[in-house]
Length: 633
Image (cartoon, rainbow, N blue to C red; front, top):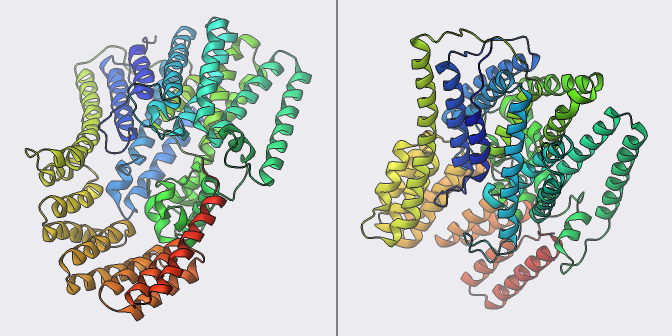
């Protein structure tokens, strides 16, 4: 005997996660989506206990691999330099251990609950219709017709997912599901064509090469398997050959000189599909290069979940500086396998690959051996899962795609099975309420500090009734990862009350707790530099020099750190020390506009106006050369 699944909860999650849009979030909207994902996970698991449908262990190989992967992640949490960060995830993305735990729970619940054809039909229809609304939003955003958006500089559609790459990956997963509904007559073909057109146009407006490649992979896998399953093997081979030929053409075009800047944006993206020299692609390669060095230092269990942003700064390649340094990658390596290797080492990487094999291989076997009717949905599910697998090797995931991926994976492996105790005992509803409440509490611990921080940084500067330092202090006190809010708190003290000492104390304590984190040391060194300039105090400037020196021990190949310390030396009236730091930066990275600008300041302070102007001209020429060379979306 089995119980009907809590379908309404699944449907609500599929609608709310992609569409949730918090306009007062400090970190775009992704942390709020992760908070909602964790809340829905708690509600779904709580509902299972409430109804007495307690999930029982099974012989499914994917679940076994997932359990081992969770154990490896947990060990990595304890070995991390920042365990609380590894547990919860960094504030901007919330991609820590809890998200992996939620993924495992969602897969297990979906596998046990979403096995009936009617339930799968309703869920897939909800996914497709929700993606249609997201697509409309993205198209209006790109055309500057969305009344909720007042951004004349919008270049890439991001819709309600807050990031173009996240939107592209979401659409790449939903497009094969739209084909599935149409071919199974679960969606009228005329309506399906309109939805596909909307999805396709919105996908183009993301200008995400990773998303485009993921879509190409998913559509080709869907078409190939569908045709082969219906005995049209020659046509399936033609699809494969055509796809291969198209990729070769795109590769050749990427080796040719870039199109001029006035060429249509879409053509620029297509002809640069495999170009690695230029903004986004080269940033990825530099990040992967740093990751390879980092993995060699901790090859067994890695640095802990959500650690890439902190690890990158220890191994920062100097060539990344013109792109914005470590911030250019946003704390994400844009490659899921590298991310797992950094976070959980070689052990975690082997287990994760085993998890993927256990997930995909049985699906391929079932499709190759079963009848057409049994394959009608599984082919679409496999194509959507493949889109995620391809896209995350060049980009990263959102909470919406994480939820969708593991729900679809559970559906693909779903089968009716007996559950635990079918008669509801008194204890089970209590446990269910507790689990659901824990999910909601987790959501609050993420969202509330984020909104308080937004209020402290944005609104308090406009209202005499709002104390930004106090509001940010509440965010620090409530957040499970208060570190990033502490940096904002320090700056709030200096900006609102001109209380440099209070802000300095906050950052000094932060650095004292985490002396190896470059991001915190850099922030404290910059704070001291601003403080010393504001009060013309060389003793504080000396403290800034000391802090920069400690930071350079951790990240010696960052030219910006050398330039920053050199500017403080100039501020202290020590031009020789400044010149040595500037030259070191130039040795690490030649023809860097910031170096020429720093030398212009140096020459100006030496009273050599002509040399200062020459250095300034070199800075302008280098920046112009850089702008002309880098392919920018």
